[in-house]
Image (cartoon, rainbow, N blue to C red; front, side, top):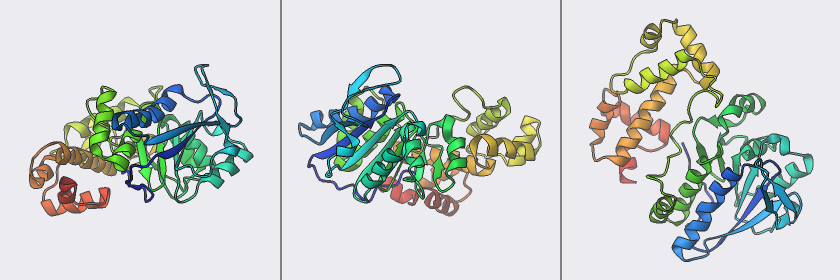
Length: 321
């Protein structure tokens, strides 16, 4: 669950944002991260964010698509008064020791550091995500988990944990930055930014990325298990019942979840139910007790405890917020 960064002041003064682009960066991810900030300023008719394009040198930087952006400054000459640094990179392969040292220097407690797509893995390589909850490109999740066990890796499209922001890339960066705009300048402006991009609504950070890699590596039995879970939220099936429906053993099912989703079936199922509950609390007027029953909880007390343990606040507090 995204946690509010401790360093998000709610003032309207302009924030200086460094945008570091490294060769092979995703142009889509970079635009998805920066355009919401620029649009927020235009809609508010105020200079909310000042963007400064950075590179390893002050020269054009080629994206993965071959288009080039001109870096205004080298990262070594980045202004000392940056409020936030966005790191747009193809992955950890873009790292070298000088770059790693500079990122560590810039990662002060009062500065937000964001890893966009492969930039998140670069932050991991620099040791800047240890002890933080972080999102990664789905196809790199398992590799990063093995290489950096101190990171609390997430299946979500994006994560905001204190002064670290990470996303899986692409349009997840759009949702993450609109969430940030909402926290810094209010939900009304964030909704206007969302409408500007012709989005029906902002995607929330608690909506998981799809299982399996983009190449379609998830086994059919796992996809069937997830479909069964989605179809049985109100009356959840046990792990044994899921396995029986699939014609496999419970141990086989547990191994599938551990290999592809890094979770046990019961925990993943509980996450799905709580995510459904959160959407109902946010998007409907149903009483919390009714939401509890709709998401498979036998009592309001059990529901409230599980919800607080997962999201850090009670269903009542969620509704009030």
